[in-house]
Amino acid sequence: MTLRPGTRVRARLADPDHHTRVPGYVRGQTGEVVEAAGQWPLPDDGARGITPARVETVYSVRFPAAALWGSGTHWVIVDLWESYLEEA
Amino acid sequence: MSRAHDIGGQTGFGPVPLGEDGLPFEHDWEARVYALNGVLRARGLYSGDEFRDAIERIPPQEYLGLSYYERWLRAIETLLADRALLAGEAPPAGQGLLPDREGG
Image (tube, rainbow over all chains, first blue to last red; front, side):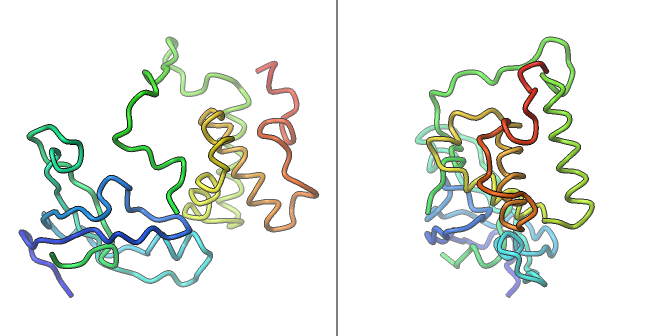
């Protein structure tokens, strides 16, 4: 799966019992792909000593600040591994 | 499981304290903790992801009371204890490996 810029995505609600790179403030939030930011090992695997860690595309995803914080007119861009995302 | 570290967007913690001298460490023991982590990582004892996970596993009531490098030290102690490289219970942060930290 390659997500094109502009694709609407939702950060999964899953809240795993180990290190992950999904900040709580975007969980369940809908944003839009800015660009693919390369292929990187999944930190969730690395944190659990799983080798080799799965390698996934990381996407820079932008969220409207007002949706996250209740105010603000800017975007908040978060780098998210592919398995953190579902199409919205 | 949400953890105590995941506080992005939360307010009420006050300003981030910054030293006035521009130096990266407030105390010498912090530089030693930084270096210790670098050596252990370079020797492949644990990965950066495992290190972050160990910081985030610090119980919330303890996590919130520790300084940045106290958390680093606590995580190092946890990882070494996990690997049976540090005997017994991990000591309270800053009191096991670096007993003289009060002296800076």
